[in-house]
Image (cartoon, rainbow, N blue to C red; front, side, top):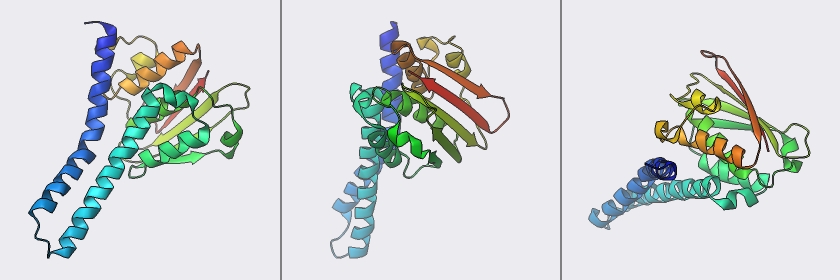
Length: 209
């Protein structure tokens, strides 16, 4: 199996996994509409809310994935990227703390790096967490992302990716965002560093490109 095929398979699996729940809920709501008597106005209102919330969630996820994994993500400003991120995390348990200096930070070309890193770090906080985002003084794209979560979980294979020892054959839908981030860094001739001690609630990631 070629590397590009393996990457495409794993990425498609991840995208479908995240989109199937809201799309399935919307489909269920539409089915309920077709079987609910029209005089039950209260039921209609509840079903309508289910459909609206589900389609909104699916749209937010699709917009996020388009920016994170498509070329358009590198044309976005930080403000545009952050708006996409807030909608994606709207019903999640990861809270963002963004430094005001990011409004004027160089960001052109760094959107996908930020989004794929955020998607991966969200996986590390399955229950609840806080992600602090700062921009060190730099003439080029630079971000520091500090995750605090309890528990903080690194999926199997993540450290191998960060230590540049992973191969496409060992990837999973949960680790593909981290690998994609690493591939983008290679393409942009960027660098990264991280600080993590197993068993602690803190993970710090520095990105430069």
